[in-house]
Length: 144
Image 1 (spheres, helix red, strand yellow):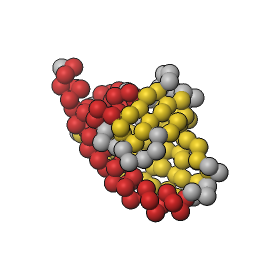
Image 2: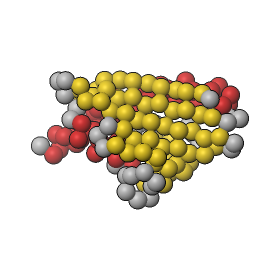
Image 3: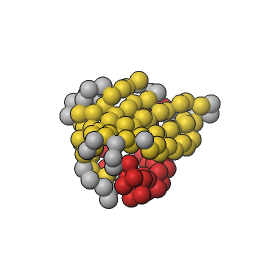
Image 4: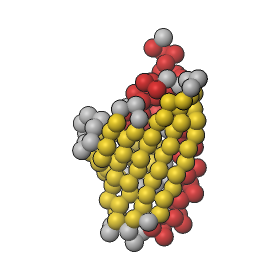
């Protein structure tokens, strides 16, 4: 198994950040990691989504867990293995939120994933946190 994790503290309203995260079709508009994305139903466990990251293959994935305003998880299959992801949001004092993203890759493609995608995926996690903060601020200002 191979694990990639990143954490950042952003400023924002947890409800607006959560709404931004749950708007899967909107990810490509603000997340530099995503070229295209959709969700085939409500943002809840069991719903299937699809995404095409920049520089990576498109894939179907399934939401495995949703705890509103706290975390959501997903998984997608790989030949002989899978990728699982967990996205966590912890409100902190002063309108800050600790964001943590963890990906675990299992199966025979681990060496390829580690060599080809590992560093870039981790760097993209930090870019996504920064973009999430900006998009949530934009949405919050628009709603005010």
